[in-house]
Length: 125
Image (tube, rainbow, N blue to C red):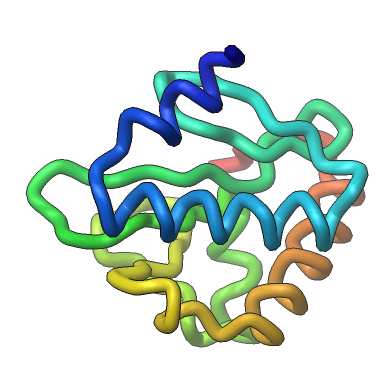
């Protein structure tokens, strides 16, 4: 079993179901995405550059779907939040699967993918 699969299996509900659902949407929407296990969490890379990651931040009750270049996407996608005073990363917080706006999320994935492909590097701040 791959480390990323072990990570998902080790999560408690409802986080496990939310993460597995988000993962399925990412993998079906962007077939070219590469799923990696880095820094003990799942990352989704485009052309070897990290585009987004899934995490459960300590002391929170949601899954953090974090876009590495989120600062460049937040005007177009107001659902992206910066609750942790991060310089560049913006995220969607999901407490339930129903919290995910499927169509908006797919549009966000396409836009984030196009953005990361144009970038020389993912982290710029």
